[in-house]
Image 1 (cartoon, each protein chain N blue to C red):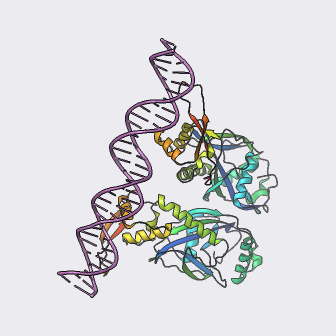
Image 2: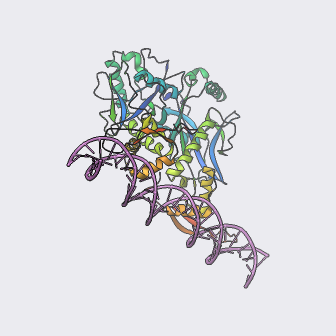
Image 3: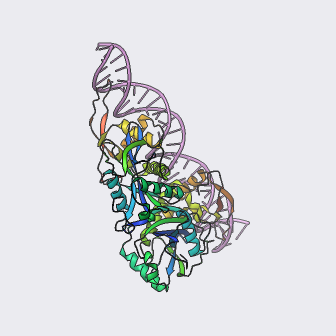
Length: 240
Length: 240
DNA sequence: TATTATTGTCTCACATTAAGACAATAATAT
DNA sequence: ATATTATTGTCTTAATGTGAGACAATAATA
């Protein structure tokens, strides 16, 4: 959203919401925004302009609301049962941002939202909030705070999709730094899928995929054998 | 769509389109409608009412346009890049149906469509077209005729999704009659996934799933051993 | 009664996976 | 120096799953 909000510029009653996943401290985190003067959190979301595709809209909205660019977003579901709660919330949102409700009656209708998710390197991403949000926070996707609209459901559904995709695509590597240890990779898989793996078998499986490149050793200063660092081998099949 | 079309009743610029799969004669078929006075085909689609959820809308639209009821529809993707072609097509559609373009200018905008797919028993389903369509037809999804809007892309994407889902969920059984032979089941899998399977190994795999119940023998009158008939065992995990 | 096309099942080789075992290593303690 | 310790990389064995061929059983026809 921006200051030029108007009934002509955007497709009415259609929004996009982004679930940005990051991995830190053995937790799968989601990037949340805190709207001004509210006591709940929301996903970065916004409207779809008339002149752009829905995928483009998701990119732009994420950029405008968090300053994140070049994030690979994957559409995963449409949420279309948002009830009256959404309308009341939106009305208060306008008031809280000193916008005249009369000018934006077209905003006060039931919304259909297209959900997108992305996987980012937590250690690199530095979001910057826009004027509608007073702060951002990375929250454990399994312990979300009070969420506005139906954003809790959207985040949970995004997690389900991520779990499904982790088997097929090799999507998980985007959540790690450039280089990582086998332990970090295992911890990531365990966190996302919420199941433990055997250290030896996990290592074999990952190495047999033929997509990891061993680069160097990581000397942590701990009293034990130093683990290798790996990186995702840039091959013909990128797997995203 | 119905005769009460009006800018207030529906969410503007948002539609649903249904890809109805049926299995017949070793082909995976899709139910297509032929709009009056056009030389292309379309998927059964329509608008989302203000008062209903998107999933509900898909159910209703399918019912209104084909008279099919109680079909389990699965949302699979949003198509939001429909270009100007859609607008021109829509204008002609209004003219061809004796509707005044001036009254429906709100329809002449870029559309975002939510795609749904369903699997039905070809031998049972008997569609009836509405007043916008002059006929329906079951077409091989791999040899679609000239399609309007971006409906070819929607149907192809639906097939991709179905192929992905066939591994996870046991979704395929909806495409067969109540009882079926192992051969029919194998043919269905081969058609959807477009790969041949070994008769013996396929049978073993399916039986080991523990979800098939052997009911009786099918005497075809052919000069060979009669195959068993199976049915989908209604268990705690239904597969849908 | 022999023939034929198909079906249901078995077997063997091979690949994949689960689980345990053990040597290698980098620090610390003695 | 040497032993100790926690962790890592890899190997081994058994169990399980899969690909491919073989064969008996069956229901009609010749």
